[in-house]
Length: 106
Image (cartoon, rainbow, N blue to C red; front, side, top):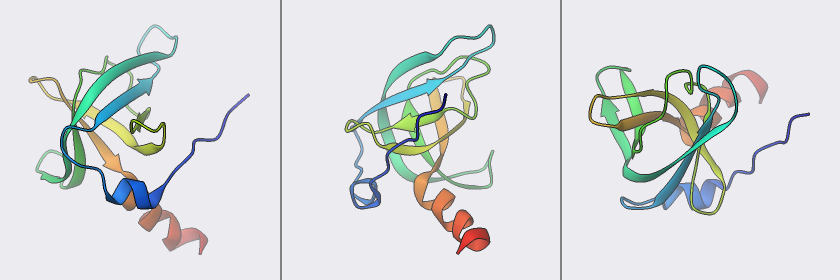
């Protein structure tokens, strides 16, 4: 059974540095893992991914890529892509996901 995520584009657009975040995914070995984090940058260009990303202080575990990043209200804000050596997690922002989705389904 899958539960849909909630989104709030207006709230997403007001995300600011220091906002509490929750990173949720399924690491290698299975089982849902949740990691508390803090938003470092709501919109920053990352060379590694060649696009703008959310940057979150919070160390996800290997295998959690593809999981979700959620704001303090429980809204989906992005998709986890990876973590740096300094415990910074990069996530594709909701705004980019919605933009890409609209190219195919609107």
